[in-house]
Length: 342
Image (tube, rainbow, N blue to C red; front, side, top):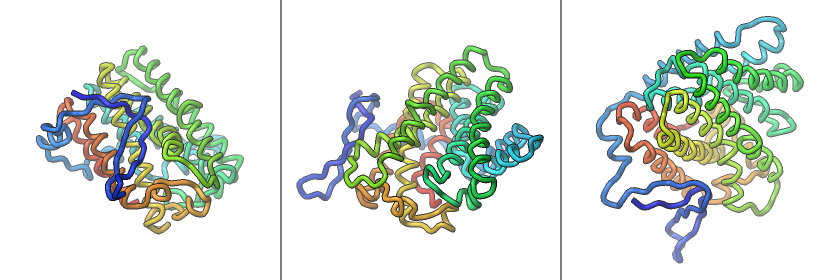
């Protein structure tokens, strides 16, 4: 089995400039199968899976758990603001990945649910802060006015802070049936992925890159491996650790989440220039207005779509070797993200 180093995707055109190549450079390692076998095909063969029904059932359970985790109490203003953004709907991809990763390695939904709620709290915090005037300055999120438009900037900031703190409290105090060592390890891993070496660093570099006339593919990848992919990596690792996964299983799921997170961003960039605000539930064309470098701006829409397809295949490849039926939700999730319309 051959191995290539991955971490920084580089685009190169052939002499005819008609073919797109993806080369990988140091940071992480990925196993590549021989040409005669296709891990993705193998994991897709054994099962027919109703992803739409799966998402509906899981989202319903997750939403009930989130509602219970953040009750309305004094001071009402801060709890109203927390609940406003947290319960506004959304795809619930982070909690779905957390639960699916836990179940894939032998755990249960019950073991993972507090962690699933926690990662959605953290994700919501990042959206509240990302929408602030000092950041991306957006007025619409999940089809409704952003938090600072409803509650003011100060309360929006505090609502995000409160959700971040509650996330870690919720994992520590509400997780049951899991050895304490796993809980501590999972919390530590999650914190690493969302902190100054992960999500925060990606956000900072994204902010400082606005208006730059020349941004390389490596620079764009640095941003989104951290700003977007790291959140999903931390989510998958947390679920796998709580479920008792081996180091190899945890690493496979981390790599799956890395590719899937980057896939989400590439598709997000494509949708930003091909869909309306009404279709997206957020302001369309915002990246162009802000003069931000995106995958379509750097590569063109067609090459961005090719890149998204390659990322989807690489993500699904990481699931080879797992029970096909248990891996089905994550296989289907990668397909959903690659072909989503909002």
